[in-house]
Length: 292
Ligand code: ATP
Ligand code: ZN
Image (tube, rainbow, N blue to C red; front, side, top):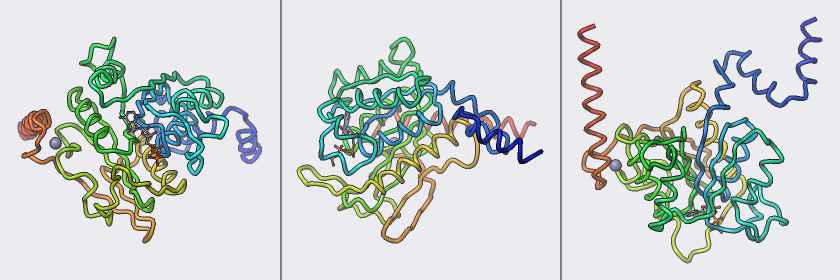
């Protein structure tokens, strides 16, 4: 009888039943909460496009996608995009494919550069309620860009909005990567510590340089996207342990994890202000606890 029931479940053609099984098996308390979550993904390249596909297949409620680039045949050594997409903007090509996979997701496509003055304003407007530039309407921002300037821009916007975000990166030699959770005032921000130069076996020299043709592997990018979205699911649905930092060194199959504390001397004034605010909150909580 049990087996009959199990095979009936397997035959169910609703993809959500497989996801709902996570709940039956006690991994996630309330999987359906995912329908209420909105994630913004900046950079729909080798890592971002795969992350968007994973979120779409997981049944995310809303997906905001940002990229200034178009699909090129040179992108075919990555996953997700197909030759027939070449010439389309990455965000439009992504919406087209992802809509077919899961029409229940609310997609928003932003073909723009987030680092220009106008782009920054539009980016902040788009992730805030009624475009007020103050209150975030997303649950998480994922950074899947490939340059320092864009990461600094996301860092600034998220500090302004006190919005938690996750940073990701793949080294220029394509054999290492990382993901990092950034909670304004609580963890290091992107300006607190020199980027990527943490004890992870990632060589500073492999950071993206202008005018140098970077290597890329669909394997490393796929793995980093997988780490990023796994951490996102745990964060959004409250299960398991969210990794504050997870590195991947493909040469040695070394996966370092660590906490990265905020730097009180961070060059970003907003970060320092939030560090003080969080420290005060922490002290207050401790006092309240002592009082019982
Ligand atoms: P390559 O440089 O090797 O050709 P790529 O540019 O596609 O690859 P990826 O690492 O695959 O790089 O993806 C990064 C993505 O982030 C790209 O699609 C890029 O267009 C996007 N991106 C980078 N900076 C910005 C920005 N300031 N605004 C919007 N999108 C950005
Ligand atoms: Zn900082």
